[in-house]
Image (cartoon, rainbow, N blue to C red; front, side, top):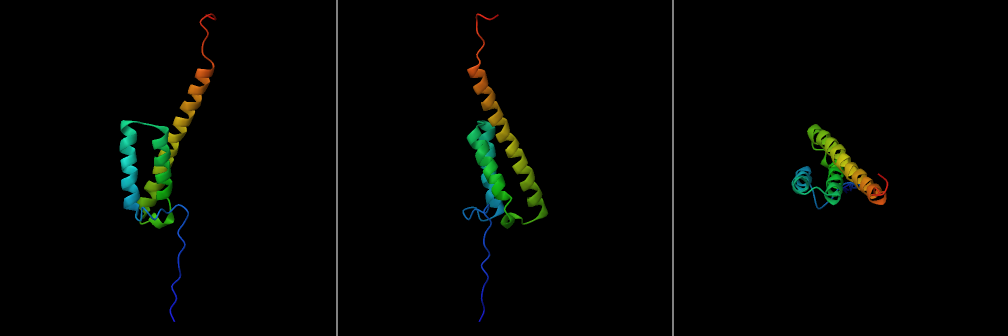
Length: 102
């Protein structure tokens, strides 16, 4: 009697993107769209895909692991920049310079 042990996928693994190559292709598409028209939504999507790439199931090589970590840091920095800019815009819109106080 032979039993197979089912390996539970990590929470980061996306069965719709079964290989690191599939995640990287998706991430490349998002990066291209982001380069043409940067937005917080695309930065969030890129960050999510980069986080997905860090799942242990995609760790096919040291190069993939290293690239996944760097991509996650880069997308997180872009997302943070968008959020800081949005916050700055809200403050600027709230505190508009008065034309009478010059």
